[in-house]
Image (cartoon, rainbow, N blue to C red):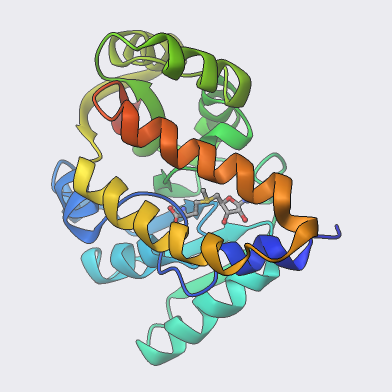
Amino acid sequence: MDIPLYFFLAYKDLDRLSPGSEDTTLEVLDKIERDNISNVLDIGCGVGQSTILLANYFEDATVEAIDLFKHYLTVLDENIKENNLHDRVFTYEMDMRDLDFANEEFDLVFCESSIEIIGFKEGLKEWRRLLKPNGYMVVSDVSWISKPSAESKKFWKNTYDDVDTIENKISQINDEGFRFIDYVIVSKNDWKDYYNKLEMNLNELKTDKSAKNFVGQLKKEIKVYRQNSDDYSYVFYIMKRC
Ligand SMILES: C[S@@+](CC[C@H](N)C(=O)[O-])C[C@H]1O[C@@H](n2cnc3c(N)ncnc32)[C@H](O)[C@@H]1O
């Protein structure tokens, strides 16, 4: 797949590729019974901020992380080496739509800000088989956190049509053979930090004419969020396979 250079430059040196923070992820992980976790899968790991955090949190677990883009996995591989985690953290270039893992291999399947690529219901349906009975699934997805403005609705209708209320997401979770445990809303500060960093990179790309549409779309995303930050957020959903 040919990815234009400006795509990578937009996300250059960002420690994460979506709004989030260590504090938020720890709040999520604290809702899991830590003792029973020995095999973890991180789907759409990007540069792997979450992968390293998962490995440090579940100290004895094996953590496997997949992403479609080698470019990001190379950054993560360096980080794994630096953190001396190479004996139990492994990366694979793999498509989340076609995961090459056995049924019931994992105690925890984690996916931060990436399930929109396959779709919320589809992701739950496809990935359920990877979990041991009673295994945990944690996914974050853009969700309405209050009644959305017309601008938010229009933007997300054209960007990701699966945005829904937390209540509806929970009922989809229950319909797909999981027991819903809890949710955590990604904070406004997490979004602020992420968009400030992303915006600086986008400003560097201002003179690249080939990047104009791409930069314009991301700038619009940032503007819509800043004007409607009460309407939506990524929400982590914590659930168990029934
Ligand atoms: C929004 S980023 C989130 C990355 C990371 N989880 C984070 O929160 O920083 C989405 C990630 O999904 C990856 N991705 C895109 N399509 C994919 C696919 N079909 N299979 C696996 N990963 C994919 C991208 O390379 C990117 O790393």
